[in-house]
Amino acid sequence: MSSTVKRDPYEVLGVTRDADETTIKKAFRKLARELHPDVNAHDPDAETKFKEAAEAYEILNDADRRATYDRYGHEGLRTGGSAPNFDGFGSISDLFDAFFGGGGGRGGPGGPAQGGDIGVQADITLKQAAEGASVELSFEAVDKCETCHGNGATPGTPIETCERCAGQGRLQGVQRTPFGQVVRTVECDVCHGDGRVPKEPCETCDGRGREVGRRRVSVDVPQGIADGQRIRLSGRGHAGEHGGPPGDLYVLVHVQADERFVRDGDDLVTVLDVAAPLAALGVTGSVETLDGPVDVEVPAGTQPGTVLAVRGAGMPTLRRHGRSGDLRVVVNVVVPRKLSKHQKKLLREVADSMTAENLSSDESVVGKLRRLFQP
Image (tube, rainbow, N blue to C red):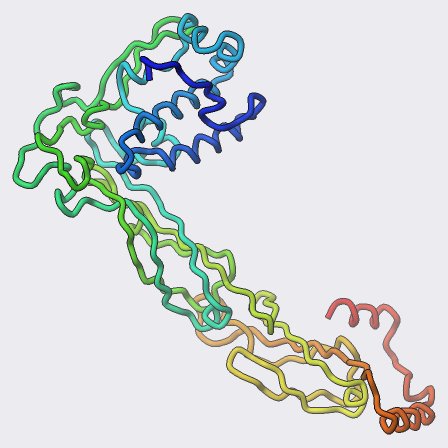
């Protein structure tokens, strides 16, 4: 990068010149995931592109550096002494680790680093949520290289002390700032903190010891789980580095909508359409449950919005056996349409026979409104 004209950091991150700190950080996160060499080994220019994005972020994330660049450009950064020195020493992985936790567990040069976490989504039906299910998931993950078993060397070849850092795993460099020169210690860009390098890098993983592959896992979804809840599988995330433990796998559960029901906690809510004459006389209706249809007795004189309950036909409480929830049946009294002449004659006879006593009710106006609008 130092031998070519440097690009505008705003252009590199794809943000406008008035972008705020949050927008800049989100833009860098997106680029870092796309360009990081550990998961982009097929692209020989990935490290250069990531280094460029990291430098752009270093400039725009610091208010003083950003102001200097906005006023004087890259030349102002060089003369002002605040330009980051990625090419002179160290490694860009520090910046990646700060965002994604790649090196948070490392205790020193060459120490173990825990792998990153993975998030995937599992789509299940409402019935599967009620009964529990085993779901097969497929996703990409960073795994230990099977050829070199994670040490980065061609099988049978030695691993030698890194000449660049003399086996220390760290490098020191001097960075100029507006306040003077600062000595900065960073991870060695050759051995990446291990202190050792393979004499003959593994051809499968290009000496990294890790490679991206597709992984399949079976996840047990407990009964009673709700949409948006997560399941954590410890140790099923990206592989760690230098003997570090793997990250975790987080499964976000999406319960698909069921047109027959609305879920309310552990209860399910459905609607039963009943013709007005039948609601007056009383009738046995059929409603769907997760286990099939059941009969529901609609008493004579049932009013619109009346709620009937089918006990134990709802959802189970999470991680408990048995259905603790109910099926709430909201009675929708339907006024018949498109009547035949004979039906109209019969209804007129019924209407003519109605008295005030037939329509009387002890229910208050507030009670009627509550029943109609808050079933």
